[in-house]
Image (cartoon, rainbow, N blue to C red; front, side):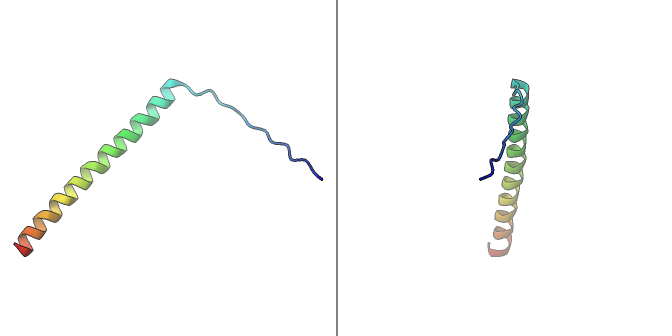
Length: 52
């Protein structure tokens, strides 16, 4: 039976990398939240104008 050799390269994780990743995630969340709030407001205004 053949053996499979596995090699894993470990890279040092620095706090700046973790912080940059979290900042990027937070910025994406804020951007999506702004678009979602704008879409809901637009939808409510359209419902009010057409059904009100």
